[in-house]
Amino acid sequence: MDQQTGIQIDPRRGQPIYKQIYEELSSRIRRGAYPVGYRLPTTRQLARELSTHRNTVSRAFEELEACGLVYARVGRGTFVAEQPRIALSGRTSEAPELPWAALLSQTVSAEPLGRLDRLLHAVQRQDVINLTTMYPSADLLPVRQLRRCVDHVLRRYGVDALGFAPRYGLPRLRELIAGMLREARIPVTADEVLITTGSQQALDLVARALVNPGDTMLVDEYTYTGALTAFAAAGARLVGVPADAEGPDMEALRRLARPSVKGFYLMPNGGNPTGLTVSVQRRKELIAWSRESGTPLIEDDYGADLELDDCPQPVPLRGLDPEVLYVGTFSKRLTPALRVGFLVCPAGLRRRLGALKHSMDLGTSLLMQHVVAEFIERGYMKSHLRRVVAAYRQRRDALEAGLGEHLPAQATWERPRRGGFLWLVLPDRFDSEELFEEAQRQGVLISPATLHSAGQPLQCALRLTFCGEQPARLREGARRLAAAIAVLRARHSLAAAPSLEGV
Image (cartoon, rainbow, N blue to C red; front, side, top):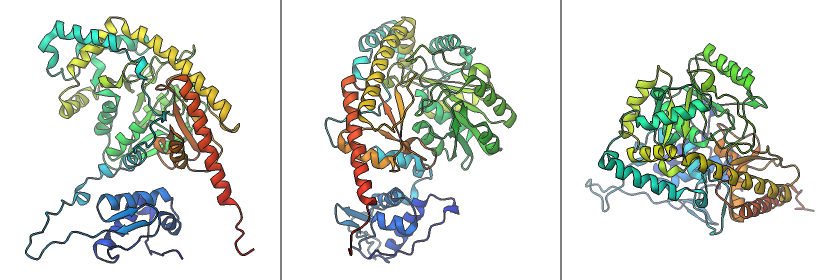
């Protein structure tokens, strides 16, 4: 017989459900309502009792275990742990740990951060095929060219390259970036470019500058995980915007526009993870909506220069309106180890963001900025991109061939024309996290829709990258994914079969 806990949860409380479950259980344990050794209900039982998802209960149990309130035994269950006792003299036989759970800020409890931490656990198999990495494999990294650039920078600038960088970044690099952007039909000057420690810092800067706790940040229905974590850590309430074949739903945006909305983050040139490219007409409508509603547009052009087919991209949003915040990076084009990105700022934000960034890191690595500038000036960037794009095109074709050969006919995806991934949608009703777990057991890593969703995913979907694996391994990865899907289908069919008990 299932245990009944009597726990009450209220979705209207403004607090995550898992947090409510955690607080109720931890309160009972601390006051002794559950004795040491007491076995808690299983996550499945408690999820059924509370009419919530099993993963929600699992998160609450993970919090309890992290605080030392419970311990889990595989195959047996989760039990109440013995709590440290404080002696009457005020001393303890062993010094107690500080109450970190009570000291932590709301930032570290942001739901997207916990979601990411939950899914990025250790991989058990040694031969795992990685369809999650978004940067080039080792054979595509320009090691020799970078070594030449580093050597030249150190010979030419010596100790001057080893100090702190100017507040807005190395002028030489800012000029080069501005030139690259003008070639991409974005009319900017070097003064408008702020160098950041990767595009992730650019997003963090925007979040810190615009968001007060409780403010709303609009994002695509499925979007970049790093943006979700950056905005959530700033205290933003994330709201997903649905899309059609042209781009974000304008009617939805008009309904959502209000003073508490501090921005709309989007990737119009091949969204991560869906690959959707926003049409020219929809871009114009987005600009008009932004101006009318007073809502900033934050454009992330992470995949710039990674065009896999001869399909010219529409003019970036920043090329249509100087009030758009434009985020760029060299991580996808070159290597993430450099940690060099940039942010093109509207005039009204430039000084504020520059001061805020300086308070965070005192400047992005001056040495790495010199190296990137040297890499561009020598012409290495263009030759490197030609090589990378050709390899990505071959790998895309290999992954698509493997998926077409092994996956069920109902599985769908759009052919990627930019970047290094595709968005796979399955007709099955099972949870994409469940598929993530089974795929790992089969030896292939995938990114479930859960990681990319502002809310609860509405479909079983996966992001599959082809940047970091060779063509033969990509085809094998597709086969392993198909095996994982087959296992889950069999499991769900068995669970749905009518019981013969009592017959």
